[in-house]
Structures are given as structure tokens and as C-alpha cells.
Length: 255
Image (cartoon, rainbow, N blue to C red):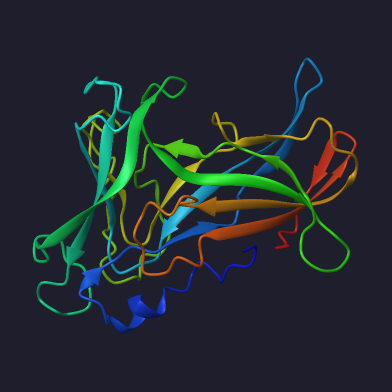
């Protein structure tokens, strides 16, 4: 579970174009920032950035629909997100917006208002965990788990501009109406959706943990709500070392 291939490599289906569905492929990029925060009350938090990158042959596209996904009888307080999966209309093995117009949809779960960020979020985009790293063998016991992280899914940074179908400009989240209740969200081909280390939700509580070597794990689409061409490359691991109120993680190493 903890080993994932390099995020720069598209899936086999993406390379060969052997599917009529132009599917996304989500991978977790290695973190840009990790640090230990000590609060005024003495709580210790590992804070870290996280970025989900689409290396597939199709965009990840989420369209909200009012149909009461939390079943409380109120159509205004939530939206069901439906993943739109484009079809290869011209059969050239790549996505071209405006040409590949055919699509199908699948239910991807709820979108709700996030009070801390003050906009609407797709639920369960990522999940974080911390394991004790053993001298030999697989990671040991699970020590700290962050709740599944919701996110306003959008294009933040173009990471792989040479991927076929990657737009030069961000497509999702480019307008003033992005991240609203009825906004279309997604991650374009070759683009990443990044959350900084200081953003709400980007932390794990390690107050009760002693000095040692640990494995920080980030897993995209932890509930498997999104249809992808490769479901086995969503996880990124990072080796971190705790010593008192300090944390060491560079140079970057998997675990």
C-alpha cells in the first residue's frame, strides 16, 4: 500500500490509448514543505503541503447536482458531485476540448460548504496518516490519522506541460465563481491541485509521540470515489524524523 511509482509516469492505459474512456489518473506529488508546529498550549503538529496531480489522458471533472446527498431533506446545504468522463470521439487517443464531446457520468459523493475555507469542497479528496518506521520490514503501527481531507478541486499549477491534452492555462477554478455551490471543479491533464502546509486540515497531531523515525503517508481518493485509469498509484510516502521539537525530512526519502 505504501509504495507508489513515480508521479511522472502515466498509466499503461494512458500511454497506449486502448480505452475509449479518457480517464484521469491521480497521483500524489512529493511534498514541498513539512515542518513541526508547537502551539502556545504545547501541542505538536506536523504540518505539510499536499498536491494531487493528474497524469492521465483525460481531465478529472466534477459537476454538482442538487439531489440531497446527506439525506436531510434540504437541497440547499449540499450537492452531489458527478464525475464526467469524456469519450474519445475522434479516436485519436487524446483529449481535445470541444472535439471529444461525448461523455458518461458516475456518482462521486457529496460536496459541502467548508466553514474554515468559506467555500464549497468535494469530500474525501485525500487522507493522511503517520506510521512508526521499523528498522526492517513494512511500516509498523498506525500512530496518527488525519480525517479525510475535503478540497475545492481546481487547477493550481501546470506540472506536466508535455502531456497530450494539457491546457496551457488553468481550466478549473479560473473564474470568480469557482469553489461555489454549483461550480464545476476538476484537475486538468498535467495540472496539480495543491494545498499549502498552513491550510486548515494539513496537519497531524504528534503531541504524544516520542523521538523516532516515522512514515508520513498521503493517499489521494482514499474512498475510491473517482474513476481513474490506474487506482494503484495514489499513495506518496515520506520519511520524517522527530527529535524533541524539531523535525527532519530532507533530503526527501520514501519509506
